[in-house]
Image (cartoon, rainbow, N blue to C red; front, side, top):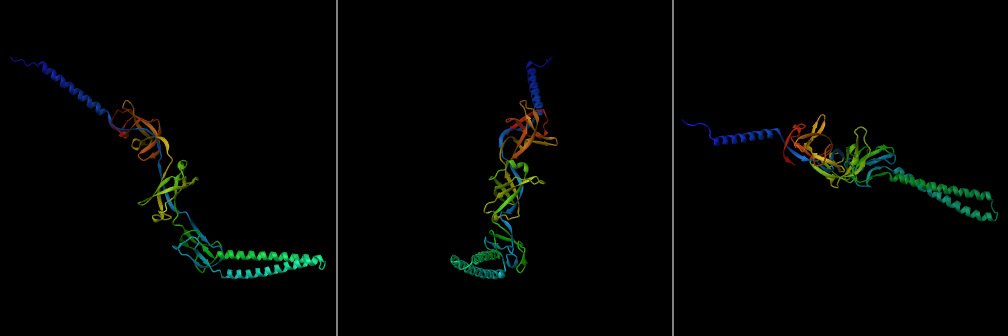
Length: 357
């Protein structure tokens, strides 16, 4: 009869195969228990974020042109007229003022003649007084007449200067170079002093006025360069003025940006623009934006400890700078946080790090 008992070699081979199978199964189970993630380190860095804001283009020189005298208008510039500084924006019919000045000049000449006559008379009477040829009363009366004549002459000359001042106001001149944007009065109309005749805007000196949340005021600095965007165009603007007073309703303050000289070729006063303003950099702990998980009960990151387990750490986002966020919480520089897969991790869950960025 044949012996069907297995040999010792066969038993050994079967035992080895069983051991290999058990190890592979244990490895598979162990691997399936750990969640594969990507991690990144917490870094201490200077964060200088850029803040978006809405802005409007304004002219640095925009004014209403008013009448300096009362009278009839002879001419007023029309909207769209380009006027250089010192050129006429409006003119008055000033014929009556010119006649008035001529009359006043003649009156001043008469007052001058009267004063000179009385001055000579005082000199003559002064010599006669020494010989008692005339009374002191007559001499003093003539002196008084001379002094009154001198005063009349001064008044006449002042009156001429007043009329000349009004004549200069007959020609209403532009205070700066610009374009007429409104014509509020027309030729032939009689207007009173201070009546608004037209409006002018300097189209070459432009600035952007942006409204920025008041919390950024301490970190805003004059001289910094901001980005100004409109449609497909982008310009650089320098922060020229910061108005440190908040609007009580919007809780924003005003920042004024100086635009480059070529800005008038692409933007116009009144145009709406988007502004990105730089803030002063501060030291902070930063993490990748994708590592922060936002929930109703707050924001958190999943820190990976030395045991390769995830720990939930609550954080407060204080700033943003591109793909990184500045956070405040129980973190230290060098800590590892989950970047990809953090949303699905649970506190204490075992992880397997695939890559570290």
